[in-house]
Amino acid sequence: MITTFLSTEQHNDYVTLHFGIQNVSGADLVISYGSQPYDFIVTNEDGKEVYRWSLNKLFTAEVVERTLKRDEKIIFLERWNFQDNEGKPLPKGRYKVEVIFLIHLPELNEPQSFQHLSISTDIEL
Image (cartoon, rainbow, N blue to C red; front, side, top):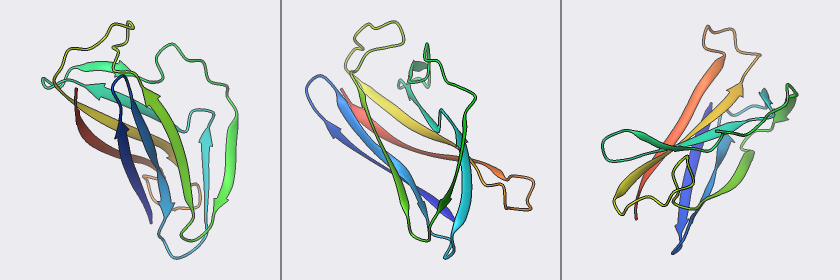
């Protein structure tokens, strides 16, 4: 019903993340999300979290409800500058970037109406 997508554009000092969701259900869907509709986490080769986008950010209690039309996409853009949670540059190596979408589908009569949608990719520094 909803698919995710992620692409990256790597530069010398940062990577640009283009990501989002698409309604592929064949019908309009009513979705809702808070002021933080996503998060992204970077882990090193050992699986240890080295960066979390939402860390030290404040979000409001606002809830956005909207209709996601059939085949419509919601696209987000973020930049990560290859630093850890403390602002220190990370060493060269392979890292996994995982985007987690915090989307609620209230019209579904399923126990998992809050879907854990995520997508990931590997990047090499």
